Length: 224
Image (cartoon, rainbow, N blue to C red):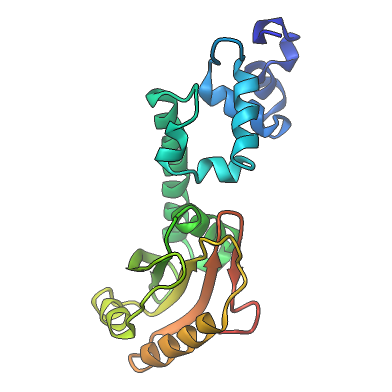
């Protein structure tokens, strides 16, 4: 069935205007971005195929540019639009975390970290440097490793905290394996950084382990 053959109130554009975005499925929202399908496949079918291929919207929006490039029907314009949506979300969350205390919006912190780190193929260790009001000063990707480990140097984290005049930090790293369970090595690293930063009166508030679909708080698990 062609999109124009659908009942008017079932078409994504009309549906979002009359019933609001929450009424649309993931594929329908994506279809609004894509706007057109390809020969033999209307835009809703293409959108659903993309959602299925990448295991849902989170997987699609975290997909690397090279992964998108391999999909028939996703030309440069459509790929650029998807990348722009992710970047807009990232910037909106960054602004939100800079405007008010970080832990006023715990879900925003998780979403922000997932957008920043969740899709990386290699392990990244990042630090959110916060001011005395727990507002975000900067998120900095400080160390990059292999698929299995990252070398983290406490002295460099301490030096950066001093340069930024940070009062506290939130640590974060991704698990490319897709498993968000903190390891024993993660616990040891957290305590090492906590001790090093404590020497300059900078508190470690949390350490998040991030995947494309989760951001697990080690503080909530009693590990910080």
